Each structure stands twice: as C-alpha cells, then as structure tokens.
Length: 390
Image (cartoon, rainbow, N blue to C red; front, side):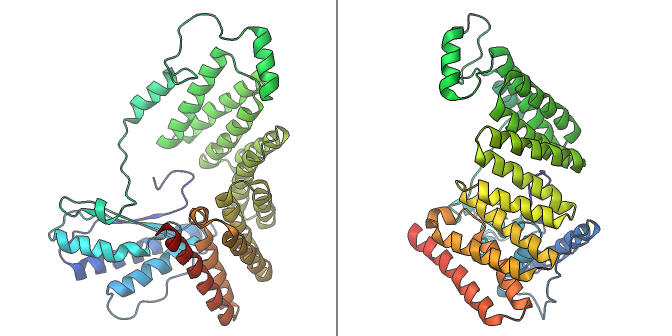
C-alpha cells in the first residue's frame, strides 16, 4: 500500500513486541523518530524540505507521544498528505494493556494528516473498540481472471451470436447518449488492457503498465470512445510518472485534460489537472503547478474533496514560491469553502490539513493571534462533524 504510485502517506510500522505500556510507548516514539528522519533524508534527495520535529524533552509518556504523532503528521502533510502509523507488535504479552494503549492513542487519528492502524490480536476486541475498522481478503488473480471474462452486464461474456442492437438502433442510442458504443470485441479488448494495466501498476511493473495503457488509449481513439480515451490517457500519465518518465506523464495528463474538456467532462478534466500539477510540483516548476492546481479546483466543483485538496496544494506551491500572502489567502478561502459544506461531506476532505498548514504559516510570519483563531476555527469545524454524527 505504501509504495502505490498514488499514495502520499508514508508508513511508520512499529513491530516491537508489546511487553508493557511504558516500553511500548517508547518503542513507538523511537520508530517514529527514526522513520521521519529517513523520510526527511529521502525527500531532501529530491529537493523537498521536510521540517524537523522539535527536540523531545525528557522521557516520552503517552501524552507526549500523542503530541509527537500529531506533530509528525502535520509536518509530513506540509509536503505530502500525512503519515500512516501502524501498530503491528510481533507479539503481545499483555492483551488488555495493549488494548488500553490503542484505545488511548486512537483519538489522534484524524483520517487526513495522521492515520492510525492497529493489529487486532486475539482477545483484544479492537473491532468493537474501533468501529471504523474494515477487513478485506481477495484472491486478486482470480478476481482479475473473472473480470476479464465478464460481459457488459456482469454476466459471462457470450461466445457468439448476433449483436443485441441493429445498426440503425445502435446509431439512435449513440446519438441519445452522445457517445460511441464499442463493438463487443473492442469492449472486451479494452477491458483486458485496462485490467492488465492496473494489475501491472499494483505489481510495480510500471513500464508494462505504460505499454498496456498506451494500447488501451489507442484502442479508444480508433473506436471513437472520447471519454474512455481521456480516462485512459490520465491512467497512462500516472503509469508513466511511476515509471520515471515525467515528460511522457505530463503529455499524457495534458492530453487527457484536453480530451475530457472537449467531451464536456469537467470532473475528469479536474483529475487530469491534478495529475499534471503533481508532475510539475515534483519538477519544481512551482508557478505552473500552482496554475494547474487552480484549474483542478475550478473544474472539480462537483467533487468537494478534490477542490479542497487542489486549493491546499495551490497554497503550498505559493508558500514554496515565497508568496506567503497568496498562500494565506488561498488557505483561508479553502477553509471558508470547507465551512460551507455539509459536515458529512466536509469530513471526507483535507480541510484539517489546510488548517494545519495555515496555522504554521501564520505562526512563522509572526501572526500568533490569527494562528490561534484559525486553530480554534478548525477545531470548531471538527466539533460540528462529531455533533452531527452523534
């Protein structure tokens, strides 16, 4: 999960055995410090600066660890999206004590800048303690084979027979839909190419994914499938970027955006703009990246989570460019937008990360009172969500 191309949450995996509460708290803190330092070094090699954590004073207790975890998440969210901290002890000698520690640490997980996961050992009953838990166990190879064999309606693909629509009927349906209906052969081939490309991405075979997705895009083009061609081009951009070819990735994202907008699919265009912006940001072409994030926010009006993330990164580009006033204005607009959302929708967005970035910027520019007001504002937004859910 950590090495998937679209993941922007580095993992901190704590595998130390649980022999007691105090020792385990120290083990978490030690692993956190070590992994964040390694993350900082890796980002520095790419020319990205991750602010160091403040030096710890005295022994680490649970309260200090909670603060440390939140601080590390906010720091990582300044350049990525945050951290995932996984508590996976090699063995647990005191199950009840382990459960209690997890229960006390769980509230620091906000789902955005910091995500906490814990191993559910026999007798810990974490499933009841943490109702947000989900389990998935899928035979991916079998699923992939089954999907390749499916027909358009979810049933096994027919082995022969006449088309379901006569040519005149097919023309009428295509006019009504405003898009082409692929032939049975083209549809089956496209499905296989996309599934193979996705599997290659998952396996880390990025060059193979590029070949499969490029073929899928070409098939869409010759079949007149404009929306599918745009989507395939965006997927190709992600694969090319993961394969270490930013020039090809940028071209694919931009082509996908142009195709999506020409077909009238603004949200698809927004996703393409996000991909384009990410490539530009990695290349330190900050002004261009900022413009691409602005385009994504404008095009993604029907997807609040996308809009908030695009606004967050627009502000981050401004900050990195040395334009703190523009970053402040963008993040304040983002929080105002978040405040206008239904609480249930707002909790799916990265507004908390926006708030954390704005608070840090205000503090570093000597505006402590405004930083405190912003911090309280973000807390109030979170309290509204909890009140609604209760």
